[in-house]
Image 1 (cartoon, rainbow, N blue to C red):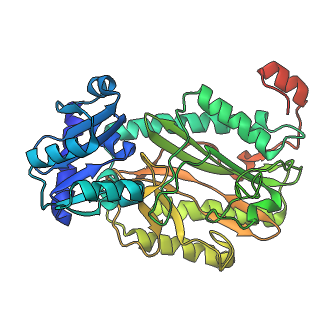
Image 2 (cartoon, rainbow, N blue to C red; image 1 turned 180 degrees about the vertical axis):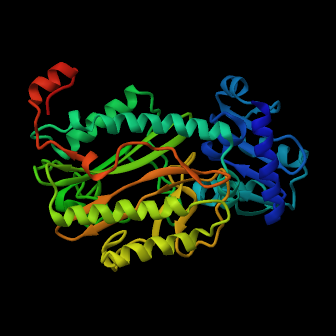
Image 3 (cartoon, rainbow, N blue to C red; image 1 turned 90 degrees about the vertical axis):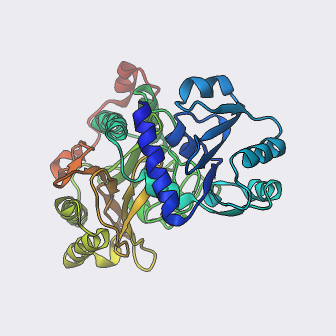
Length: 415
């Protein structure tokens, strides 16, 4: 296990050298956990030579039990302890990286006051660049998380019952995710490369509400109130409607992400056409994803296919409010490097884990989507998510269940 973390440290130091950093000072638990194995209330300092140091406010006993690092110290007075450590590690007048996007302005200002001779620069990109190639142990955790999501998707025919509201189905799904071992709400980093805090584990939107404009990229839904202007509402899912659903799970900090569109009874010709466009757009990406391929070039092929199907104006949202991003990396954030858009010139490499999520969003009709997570292999890519997605597999009976009997038999409350 120690070798895994030493490999990460070596990779991180290579990135520090690449961008000209003398040290990293991390205040964010996710980056700390990635390198140290512990996410206590602490500060992590990494230089290019000396052993990393963790200053722990609480709980130092857990930090010492969980981390591989030998130098774990109690954090008392932040000012005194940081000054002493900077002197010991010769950090004065050095170029030090801090996660600007993950650190409060107050904390950054205080750090600059404590260490006035240091030059602080943003290190968000350094951490994300280091983390984007997953080790086999990380991929194993991603598989476990995805297996939970797949199992929940398999329950959908039993969960959707007559009279169910969007929030009812989401509540049932979230309950099952937790029962199966999902740990927490996902950390959403944001397609603009900035953090957007924690999001719900499940997003479900039905019918024409799938095209409701929101603060959320591409598809958001009405939400429960203006205070949460996206996500599921109290709307009842009706026969003849579709509902798009994005389910996430977390295992040992690692995320799973996959989405499906389900139809309540036979879909209309328009919905079928929209769905097949999204389904085959995903296949264009998956068939072309292999080492050496430029991300943006592959995205352009996907966009060309969608345009040829006549849905270019509705791909990833109706223009002009559409998103250029059709996927993202997956790991300790639900979305991280590499982001998948036509402007990205990055080359795919083995170990990258990517969720590709083509959506077709038509006003007054709604949204259809297919989302799967793949890992780039030496020769192509491998699907981590395996929930059924062929059209005949996502058409659910138009309420063939007695909801009271089902709920009682399954041990769940009726809606």
